[in-house]
Picture 1 (cartoon, rainbow, N blue to C red):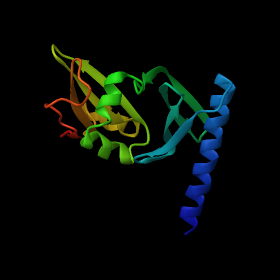
Picture 2 (cartoon, rainbow, N blue to C red; picture 1 turned 135 degrees about the horizontal axis):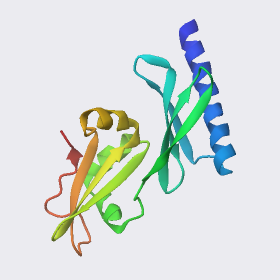
Picture 3 (spheres, rainbow, N blue to C red; picture 1 turned 90 degrees about the horizontal axis):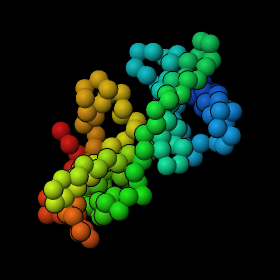
Picture 4 (tube, one colour; picture 1 turned 90 degrees about the vertical axis):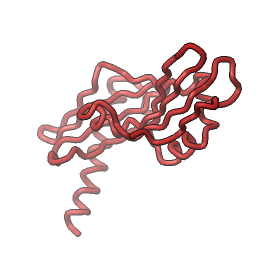
Length: 157
């Protein structure tokens, strides 16, 4: 029980250090954030900052207590018209029920655009294996007002 209490206190303290570092660097609080544990390294945590139209990732370390933010950002692409249409796909809707940090990628084709949504929380899996396995994809036809017949809206394998 003491371990659980210590982990909860530590998680709250880590979040506050990250919020303070973000506000100091950017002048505003993050829209939302995650400070999540890394496997096998309890003193280091992965950070995801929702900065509005993009995400910033980083690393929190306890010894010494510090935060570093990656210089690269990940665009959400959530305001794109193709994404609005993709959200109508039942597979995409199912994915979005549990996704906390959705990021959209669009791959244009000749007559269609492949729209894929993934969750930033599984970026470490993507870095290790080349893809996360936790994503959903649908196809939007050019000039379409709904997901195309090629809609896949599923978890990719």
